[in-house]
Image 1 (spheres, rainbow, N blue to C red):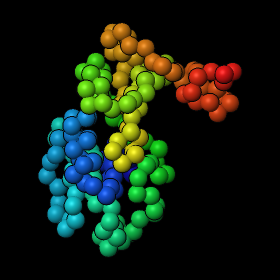
Image 2: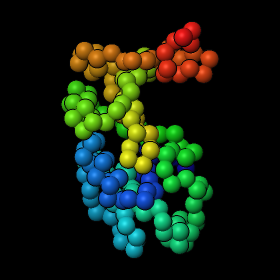
Image 3: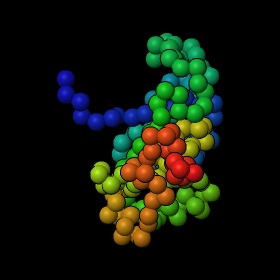
Length: 164
């Protein structure tokens, strides 16, 4: 077996439309065709590829019969998966869009990976990461609030100096 790429991520939510609206309105996904599972679902696309599946969390019969059940009782937040990440371009436009929509986000940078990252929370508490190249961020005059090199072993990640 040779793995090629992540096909899609499935998010369970109590409000499929609200969640799909946020991902489309804030991040620019497009709604697209999806199978008729007899429960509320939306499949969101980047170009021609469905990458984010959103389903109604309340239908335990479907989850048990079709998916073999749920392994988490979480109905919000990230559960055992910390975040979902998307590679992006046009950082200045993305930041302007997030600010226009009133979305709070963190700016982070990982120099040895060449990544400039934005972290935010979706409507169901799912953490979303958007990755850009450091070169694009520098060209846009952006600096991160915190870098991977700033991580302390004092458990103070992202909250100022460990000496504070």
